Image (tube, rainbow, N blue to C red; front, top):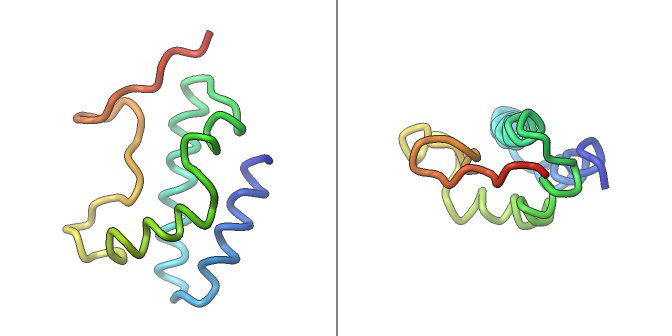
Length: 90
């Protein structure tokens, strides 16, 4: 699966959400892809680390909708403070 397919499936899960919530989750997911791609990871490796689009959607509900946790992101970005960096691509 490629990034576009993944985000398309995630968007399908988010269709019943408000446009603002959908945009928030998709932007968070795309930012995760961006960071990992900059570090040399493939779409397949990134998707494996994220889990299924349904799993990301479920995290969205388990962790709370946007704005409920002081603006925290739903996904942890590799290499950020307090988060283990991605292993170097070999």
